[in-house]
Image (cartoon, rainbow, N blue to C red):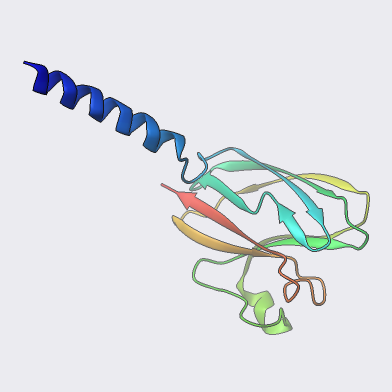
Length: 136
């Protein structure tokens, strides 16, 4: 009789510990991002496929930034160039220092991980990269 009780208690504790470890962020209908020199905070966003997303960006940096979501399977490798522009899913360009912008867009229909970058010169190279996770 003690063994099943011990097993149940152990399983409960294991589930509590695993849930506390976190994992991917729950999908949201909004993205709130703060841009600094040279990072996005947070740097991972999770949304449902085809959902209407409210987007808010605040530039706390000293230079202009952009927020570019690349198409599924498309990634900037070394430098953001004119050739990469054909692979943009959605973009919010030229967010000036001290500026906050509110926009909306429809999330991609295909689940997967999408690369997010700042397209300003040398910002990608400086590490201004994030990830959009689209779930079914």
